[in-house]
Length: 124
Image 1 (cartoon, rainbow, N blue to C red):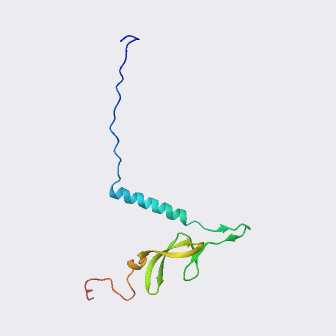
Image 2 (tube, one colour):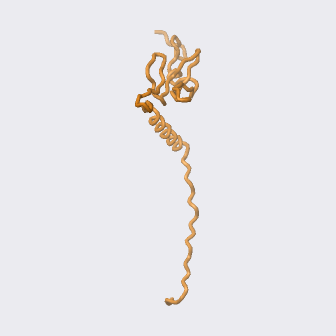
Image 3 (tube, rainbow, N blue to C red):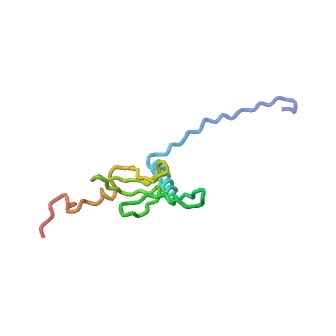
């Protein structure tokens, strides 16, 4: 073609890229990492400095009076029922919020005096 001729340009048509959705295991790992990151970020000391410069401690306490930081989880037993609770703020007051029925540690350990054997024990 000469310099005065028309040139045709073909538009490159590319199909749309498909979004890759992670499989179940990958999705669970990702969710676990997000939750772990959130827990690590929220368990920092949550002390507040008042306008007058005084530090106000924001934390929960367990039954022995030990300091539990905001965002931390513990197993609570109230009125004969056990549950996992997280130290959170509500209306500028630290409080315990139930996040799961039962406690992992309580479910793993048998009650005192109970045998974990499912079959009769052999005689010695």
